[in-house]
Length: 443
Image (cartoon, rainbow, N blue to C red; front, side, top):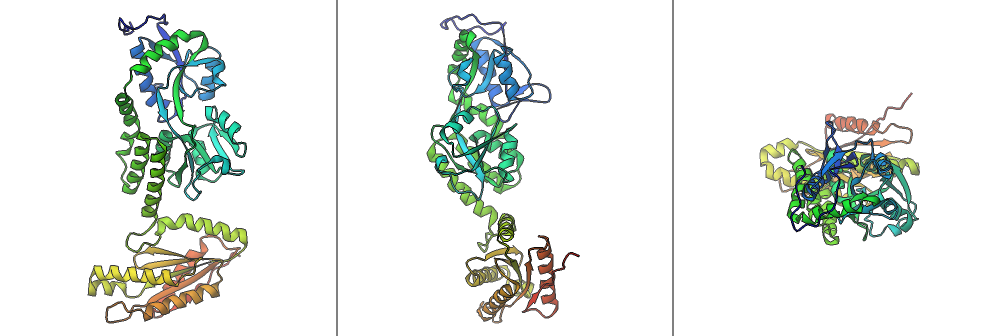
């Protein structure tokens, strides 16, 4: 028998078994697992509501959210577990009070500007999973956006990650969980649109308003502490296995925002995103970009050079006899030399150049719109500035450099193979010199 309501609870006739449909693929809110069980934040909240409302629930399995909506409209499901109220859904459903409040946020790639207002965007593609209530409002409020629909949350995030769409708007809890599980750390929270928060409710067939009233009794009984405990079980626990501490810090900031979904905390999260981006993409010793930070930068510069039909050059530099400096003067002095070389390179670089710590005692200059001759001249200036600088060692510090240029017809990987070979030649030919690469051309 179902648990009995208290004597003070108004008695409403409710069937002994209530059928319900869910979104089978909406983690961490809800999904149907391999054993056919309803699991997730919504599942735990719904079980608690049902228990306290004195009823048994029977899951009606579906293939996707569209199937669940269709089953509800056909009367095969008395209840839809976790959804926003909308005018379209009001046609056949009545709703409980909100079971969970969660803000929607704008997700973009990391290089996209912050989005203070969707009305300020022009012809950008916003991707959404099918069947979401927010679609109706976005089409009405922001006709300037091109809205594309896909089958799942994961597909929406993937399209943004792979530049097939400019942005998506999703739940903050879902964003934190999906980005972590799928590893899309080139994405960021770029904004929040006022009035577009999720007020997730239980939907009940209009013909069964009494059932809605009984469920509301259970909803009202859930405390904020109980609700947060359920969220933590499904969001926080998944972070325990992470071993990348930069990733842990990033997700910790995301999860902090889950707890405090106000505009204030979203703005703080933006600052944390920016700080953690710098930490993960820049070398702590020199302040230069590291190789992790180079990948996205190179992709953008390569795309621009192809689009503008201009050459792209690199200069790979290595501190000569750096091991002798470390062994003879100690690692703290070696670190200081690295910092001073980094400073000289930054001072000597042009505004269009990017200075990268390539690894160890190697540095790389990425030079957009730069011919081989221009890159060679830049490298010579860098070597001269280093020779003339007093490092306080009682002896000069010199650099060896290789120069390579990616012409329009070259494969992207050729330039790095060529510049590495050129640097090797500079070392073997006596160091303290610049060698131009001979890029092998395709037959």
